[in-house]
Amino acid sequence: MEKETLQTIDIKRILALAPIIDEYSLGTDFIMGEVSGKKVEKSEAILSMLKYPVRFDGHIIFFLKKGHFSMDLNLNTYELKPQSLLVCVPGNIIKLSSYDEDHIGDAELYFVLASQEFMNGIRFDFNKIFQETLSLWKNPCITLSEGDLYLAEEYFKLGRSIVLGEQLNKKEILGSLLTSFTYAVLDVWTRRINEAKEDENPSSARVNQLFERFMSLVTEYHITQRGMAFYAEKLCLTPKYLSKLVKQASGRSAPAWIDSFVILEAKNMLKYSDKSIKEIVYELHFPNQSVFYKFFKAHTGMTPSEYRRG
Image 1 (cartoon, rainbow, N blue to C red):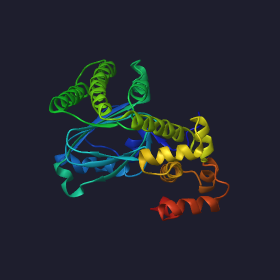
Image 2 (cartoon, rainbow, N blue to C red):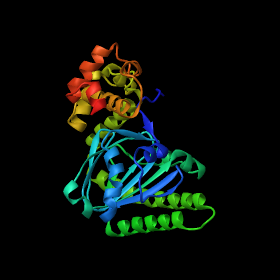
Image 3 (tube, rainbow, N blue to C red):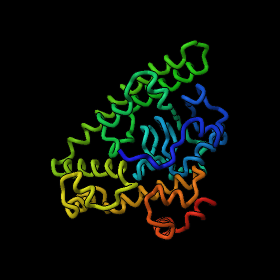
Image 4 (cartoon, rainbow, N blue to C red):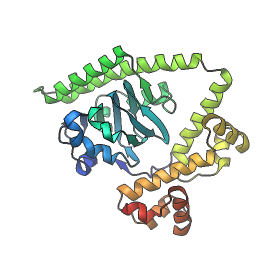
């Protein structure tokens, strides 16, 4: 596997960059909170931070009871409407693309952030469950039924009570609660995916499956491999046929997807690291700074220096 380049942040860094006043947390391993009513202004910090692409070193769960948010996850935009639930696993690139600032006070958004260390400590492979059992490229966001929403709220309330309580083994109790919640979410996801598959013809299913495999490869290798021949060979296809399938599945060209991932890497490193532009050019495998500047400006409308200052 290629070395990850995009700057990864954890709960400790989040608290340092954007302290959340009303969070319910266990040190730097676990945070749960809400964006609603009077708490909105106090939670604006984390919303503002998510306006930039971030790779979070842990698991994130969002569920929305009221309001409207747009989230970018691995370059795909998902609309979080009332009764939506979104799950991000380690390695996902997340960005808050928009929300209704005029009515943010009316929103009710709940979130849970858990570090990989926290998850590893409860001996449950969340990453494998979500990445192998679910097709997260296509289904990271689902709409909950009234019953499922009620259950999610009850889990959140119980978790909050545990964090604020006097139990001596809070980490173990929360770990068991998250395990239970994960199985509940998997049940909902499986039902939604099976419903979608019933309406999908075999030809479309194969195209979507190949597109997901292509995107998984791009996520892993885009730092060093930007040519179609590499990905086509990995998938045992010709470059021309792979390009056709990607365009058919996503409405976007394969090179555009690769370039977008590279831009995300560059933006994240410029915003969250102290590396010089020369170092970033080297880590992103550009031949020189001039080529990187032209590439970045063509895709963003500004130079790397302007983006970093902005």
